[in-house]
Length: 229
Image 1 (spheres, rainbow, N blue to C red):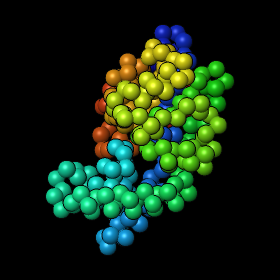
Image 2 (cartoon, helix red, strand yellow; image 1 turned 90 degrees about the horizontal axis):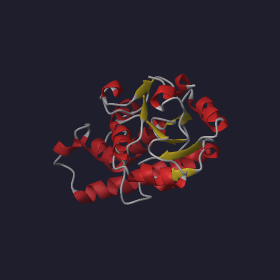
Image 3 (cartoon, rainbow, N blue to C red; image 1 turned 45 degrees about the horizontal axis):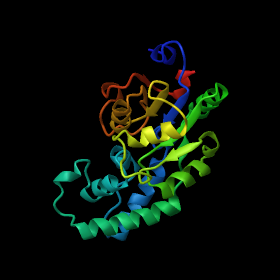
């Protein structure tokens, strides 16, 4: 299926994007911050390859997975609440210093953003990343110039997969569910779009937490956003 077919002969007038794993590969910075946190707690670092498997459900879950040393952190009974809060504070401090230092914009992103803006589309970012990190990352990667609206994980009381952040961004941009496209890399993005009643494109290169993106129910799945030109 193509975007033209998805929108019944026309393209979207509003496009919303996830940030980490969709627009930007932020795993190098996140893994450096996780390893710094672990060292501060007297634990061995885990490295970027493992952190890439754990990214995608927010900072709190990422920290819990790192403390447990596994994706399925729910089974970890060795980490008490005090240790978790200390670890989360250490992670936020470390990531605040490292955010954007090694992150890079994925190939194909800016060429499609340029095309969308040229068509008159209004663009927004909807991420579960805390607001204190969202703005700096967009600015440091040079992506901030493309977006009129940015909704972060703590901008509202709800987060993806709740539809509220998508609908909030859509309303600020003057869109409707029928004319708005969500673009993401994870089940949270796809479920949020479904819950909001809007079409969704998923990318294969992001942080899907071990589940093949093609199996998550997106309308279109691509290897690069340039494929949507």
